[in-house]
Length: 145
Image (tube, rainbow, N blue to C red; front, side):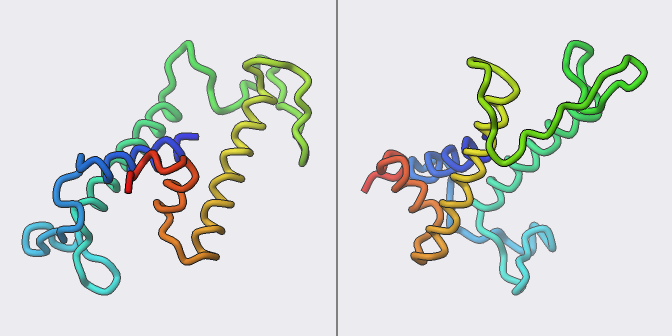
């Protein structure tokens, strides 16, 4: 779900001019090899800002995984306390409980991933830029024409 939030926030920031000089390439003399692409051209300022935002989110998630708060659920099972692993959900998630439940969380995650795969497939199949497909999917709210 964070991926969709980041994609939509990127579209909003780009369309409303919140990222300065989005298409301006970074100066290779100032940034060095950090700004190089595979063909030895510089990445744009907008891509650098988006990259750093994603790196920030990566390190926040790493910190929460490696050093969780005492009240948070750990990512590993506590075998000494007799904690049991969940059974596999299978292809179709059984939605027995309503509200905030583990099966609802699993179903939401799968729908988010399916939406991402369909959006990428549509973008590749129609040769439409990815952010234009996302804008189409939200009814043109990100990037008004």
